[in-house]
Amino acid sequence: MKTSALGYDNGHIEEAKRLATSIRVLVHDTRNSISLLSQLDKRDILFYDSATDYEPDNLLTQSSLLMIKMGPEGAEYIAPLDKFENRKTYRKRSFNNWWNRVYIFKDKDGELFSRKDIVLGVADTDGGAHVDPQLKQTYANISRFNSLAFRYVNKNGEDKPLPSPIPSAIRQIAHEVLKTLKDEFPELF
Image 1 (cartoon, one colour):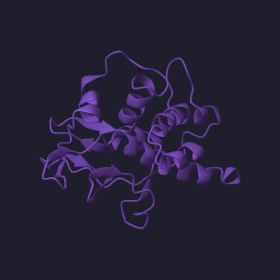
Image 2 (cartoon, one colour):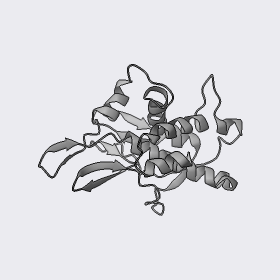
Image 3 (cartoon, one colour):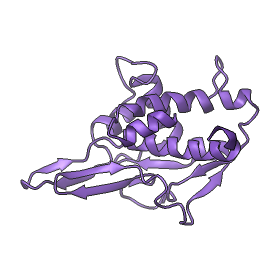
Image 4 (cartoon, helix red, strand yellow):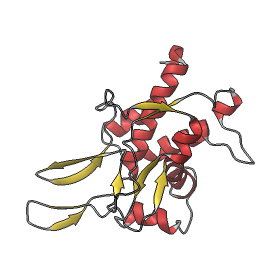
């Protein structure tokens, strides 16, 4: 995971798919497979959460895990990594809250996305460990069709949608997992 994170940070955004698959292997239990942390009896550890609070009364779209970087060439989502480590929202949560209940995106249709939704969308259907011929529509909307509805005007005056937030979200989630694992298994870091 550390190598894929470094590769992503060096411009290889395709590493987000490997990161998503690694996260799934580490934390996601199914009827047919048991996560690595469950096998180690470590699913009860607290996970770092770097997202700002979801605001259910906000009528606009929300992206609580990422930042938007704007420059002369355009705009893009970026993973803030530790840039907000000291803010009050940088805290630890139970795995279930971190994975399932903290919403990191709300799109223009009011669809809510947890870390689980994003990681499994990439790992299970979008080329991480498996490619489905048809994506779930809500995942396709956020990953392909700018359902967060953020736009920018480039230096030529053209109105453009921001690229997909998914790779940056996976990178930030991987950062949270790595920070969590460093606390729990310092000898590995």
